Length: 147
Image (cartoon, rainbow, N blue to C red):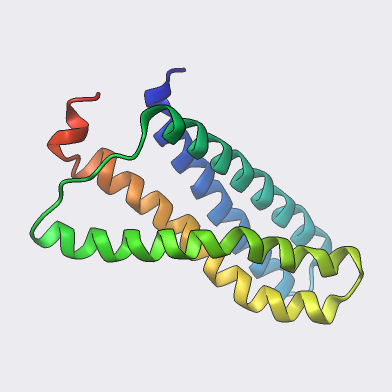
């Protein structure tokens, strides 16, 4: 594995998180709390691996400007901006949602989870879309030179 493999690996962790977040939500809506717990633990672990890989990659490589313009930029930049802003909110929100679990405050966990789940899911899904646009579907010339 090389440093250039990390964006794809990170996107895989984001996709895995999205699957487990969705499945965990589906399970708890049907009253299956034990499998819900397993899914949410898997989502947290996957998101932690993503965050670690993301930090390692960007400390080494720095931030890459996409260089997009035209129609692609109209889709990419609003998605990227919303992804980044909500990503900053997600980590503290997940932690704040998790604390009541250890206190057995299910009502509080449920109230916070109604906000946390869609935001966390959005960040995970848009993270995968950002990766696909930037590295697979429409790689800008500035990134093509680094491949």
